[in-house]
Image 1 (tube, one colour):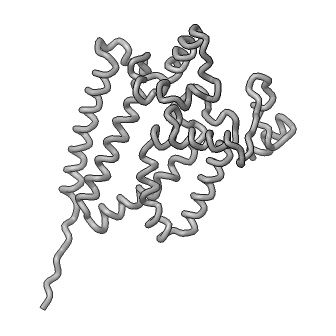
Image 2 (image 1 turned 60 degrees about the vertical axis):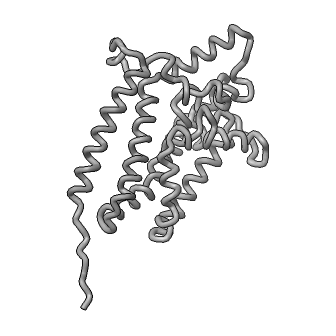
Image 3 (image 1 turned 90 degrees about the vertical axis):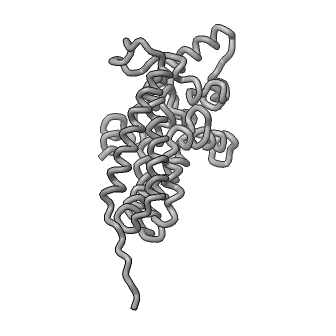
Length: 245
């Protein structure tokens, strides 16, 4: 249906309309070129856009992929084929970074599928094996992920990148040369986003810094998570021990 829509509007199933703009040409790089591998590095572990850095929860999903593959081999193969296909296509695209945005936005559609193995793993630990240590490990991983995403929500990416761009243009430095703005640690939002503008409009009038706001909201979220963890562990059924004669 999407292909038909593209054909009906633009005369080609592969034309989305973006290629018609002279300011945003759709250019590709060969898989065998060094640019492809640089782009692949950028969308996976790059300081400005790396999926593993901006959404580390997918790492937990990859760690749980082996047991998921053993139990659901065909589904696992479909997921892997889909994920690898998207990663290869985006790495071949000249504008792999997706511009001024939070992380690699072109990989957003595959993130839920990367998390499914970890979701099935924790479901098994809670319902079958009742392993409290691993439940705590999962809760810790969840807590870190939530606090990190809260950090990204308090800051504002669009103004962050524009301020960087204007600052260095005035110094005669082109941050877009070789995608420096998305690959160089010095321009990464991972460690300086909160020193710029605040994102949520309803929180802008609070008389505290972004760092203090992040700390306070993080403490609230961690407290709620700990209470939920204790409630979950308390309500888990205890395993019955069978005696041998």
